[in-house]
Length: 319
Image: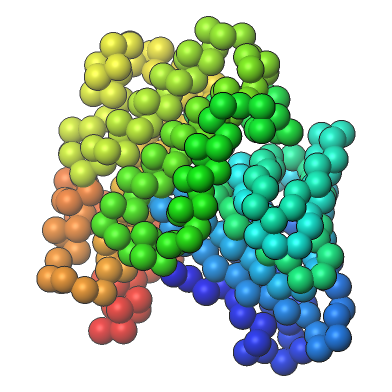
């Protein structure tokens, strides 16, 4: 578990800036405005990694999050968040709709677009976040599903899944199966969004193609440690041509080779973070996640995380 922020350990005049920084680290660039209750701002935030997705929780005094047009410039993260409001009453405004959410109710936020969300007084929310590319769905389907989740027969199933995940997040995140649990959660979310969209956003044949991309990415995540995993094998395993696979990836904004490398690097980083068990050499970690050249692995790791794999492991484990 990563405790992003606990304002109980900060002086009152440091808390506002700390809340802004924590939200920026955990999600997408957003303007944060905070109530000033008696006793000062209160906030506690956590972030857990589950393979392709993250669980982000925020609890505390009243706040308002506003994503403006200026936050969409450049190349910001393209995330989708589905949350269960924990306590208090929240209000989400996005895409011309207004949605009030109470404790235990689920909402979907398209973080690729502008939005406004707030709660007053003591409140809290727990969210599962995933990159739009990992979902393998066009953003039009996500937007068509927003506000309609309750109409899907999958609504209760997915909400119960999230509640179980949120209720035991520490233990589940530490389990070796956590990355696969994250993948399964993404698959369930994809099914919910397609169901709730009801065919809006794209014609049915295109949705079929998007489900193909979802299967390809899921297969890739399950076989990341195999050195021969690449576009040719992925295409053959799903009975399509490499050219067709590249076209589907391009439509979703994915560079397949770079996506594979980033997934392998992230998996290796999580392995290097593990404090218990026999300590593997850096070369063994590299080979375990499909890198045939340890030197190439070290260079790409440093480019991605600013440290060599050995420096990262020693820094994280305190060795």
